[in-house]
Image (cartoon, rainbow, N blue to C red; front, side, top):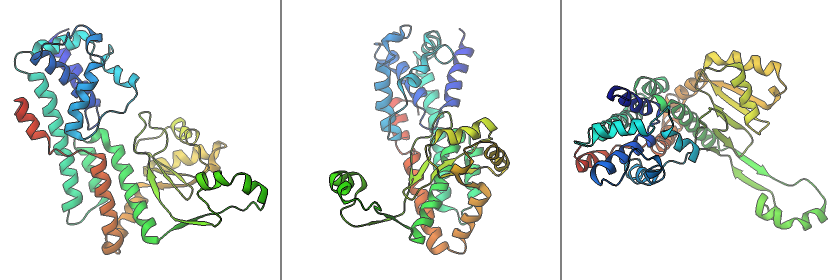
Length: 336
């Protein structure tokens, strides 16, 4: 293992990581402990595999306000042969132990990504005329955001839907239509505790909810509504197999699929050939979203547009960390 190959392996992990850089932070903290405290044997994976998760979480909580919630198997993949096994970590330690140069490299990469986040956040707040495609292009163009473009598509759809549902004052009614009084009496506790009814119908404001975590295999549920539909957002090119998997992976008979315009034909072709087509309520394309955004931000700018951008800013801040803690951290560690 030479220096160039070790750095290439590290940069590959950085490139594949989402904005929070959990795995690169874990490597940085192993190297930092080995350099400063001298209590890590970089050649013995059992010496740091689990301990380093604690070190990582301490730093990620400080810098991005959250910790990794991925499965233990996914977290431990960091030390497999195709990632950063002990021989690679040992070479990185050799480069790092004198002046912390590898740690600094990792955190400079993180700083650059968080600066990209700030740029996107500022666009929402300061753009004289917000345009959906311009906002999404930020995620496509800026290296620090490309791995998170799926989240961008998800939050723009969520913000639009939530604003429209609130402005339209949509309501949903929950009622029991079975007249069997004995059944009602026997399961009265269930009706109260689970259904939430207590003798009368219940009228609720309609809501859309985000699941919060995008599945690594790009399957599963992105949003759901308390009035029926399950919503899946797809920002990638779809094969017929992947399109078919959408229906297989969502247990709902009212699926709304949001996709790129070019993928509508692929999806319609799949639905025509399978027995799952009836489960799709609608296919919405990015052109549809763009058109609705334009209406909100022009004709209804003072009401819908304002509300939608408030939702978008809120969801963006919840999804993406700011860089406010980064400068102090870099100075504290001597990286800046």
